[in-house]
Length: 192
Image (cartoon, rainbow, N blue to C red; front, side):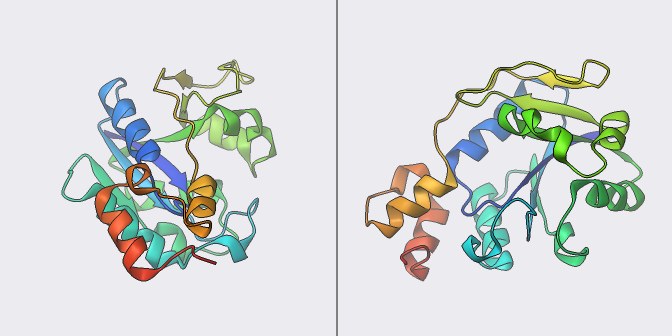
């Protein structure tokens, strides 16, 4: 069984913080590979703020390049909307029985995990790998579950800040992987 971390996100856009956390988790845990699962419609986010699904998927591909430890997945694009992690996990388990999937999340998401659809089932069937987030304690509210805290670097960077900086014409070059920065600049994304 190949242990595969699932890093879900809107990646609107993917930034260096995402990549630093993903690489750190691979190097400092028992995970063997990392899949970036691009979410088309997070039930907790407004759809109107998202760049087109395929554009975000493409930018993740640009970001990971030929690094074989990473893979980008569009699995949720074909599933019913809105996207719920439990539905995606059932689908992935059926499609890839040779893999042991684990969820990657920040400590901020762990604190609201009890609001996720079928969260109890997820906790019973999957390990969680939790990285620190500024302002959130690394405490396990689910002592019966397989929750692994990985002391990854805390990066105070968000896609929201990047989008707002672009809108205000504030430089973001070093917040993004080079090819992603060039693509966003070329396409004029997030300007309005």
